[in-house]
Length: 259
Picture 1 (cartoon, helix red, strand yellow):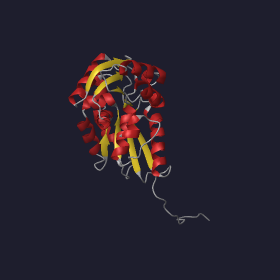
Picture 2 (cartoon, helix red, strand yellow):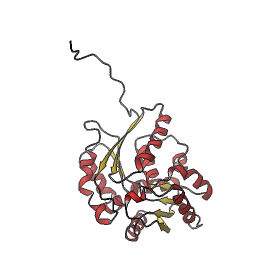
Picture 3 (cartoon, one colour):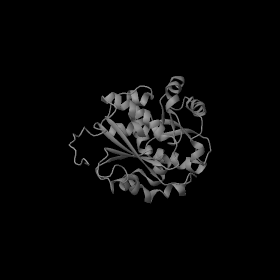
Picture 4 (cartoon, helix red, strand yellow):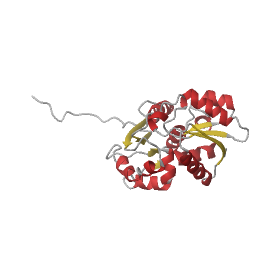
């Protein structure tokens, strides 16, 4: 005889402390890799591995990074956000692209997400980085990117319009997201040390969610004596704080310990 309608009990849902939704570029190899360690650490701080949940959906994009390919994601943000746990709300939805958030504008990104998920709080790496450096009490930054000159100048202007000063900037000059993800963390750290060693700057921002930094950030900050924050770190910190998770986390730099 087939057994049907077997009685069961319901456990508390996964993510009972915080449910995070993440819109990931189809070409991004890095953000989920780095966020897993952040979410695991936050869950331990909240009292259990099931306390903080992360759900990701991938947005179609061109791996060649240009203002045109970034702007083309505008019409895809809402439909991608709608893929995140249909019928169950996320506390926060994060859009994982620094340069596209600057090209489109944080307000436009949030509007697209809210068109399908009106109850979620929304963040992106540009908005998150501004909040992160404000929380750290610094505003004069060295910025390291993988982008072309045109994108770099747009990014610098955008952050300066948001109240940050960027007197020093460097770039790997790599235009394909698949290649950006392969930049060795040691190379990122070396470039960040060179830029951040300038006494004129108070902190370093490593822009692009495809760049790996978390595994070297503590040693890098010790060497510089200054905060170092990447797009992935700022976005993860901001998403957790917006979701009400404010416990300090070790191993991810001063941002997660002090802000």
